[in-house]
Image (cartoon, rainbow, N blue to C red; front, side, top):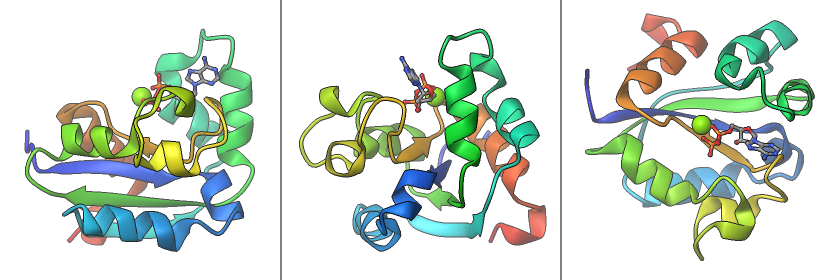
Length: 139
Ligand code: DAT
Ligand code: MG
């Protein structure tokens, strides 16, 4: 399993608020190379599958509604130690707990609408990248 790639989504609130450019700038300025990227919209079935691990949680319905309400930017990013370094760059799930300068501190409105996704393991980075991209779309 490669440790130099992670998967991200700029979630619907980031796209709605016009934050795509600023967030991508921060990602690339932090040393991540974009090796796949597209503007896309998840269906309800997509979001339910992507977040299946959370399906028993009380916020699951809201999470699926939010993630499907508009387009997202999905991307695969490359950097040494990508998964861990990207989680550091985005900050804690709840923006109130996120460190200064992190993407969620700067751009997230709430724990539910928290601007960006970052994979939590190398294994999930691979699964999530393949969920969103065909092999020929990843460079
Ligand atoms: P992360 O996105 O930091 O990996 P997670 O995997 O625990 O966080 O949860 C996935 C998403 O679900 C998260 O980005 C936002 C939503 N979520 C998590 N906990 C929540 C809560 N307590 N209330 C509302 N939404 C929540
Ligand atoms: Mg997670």
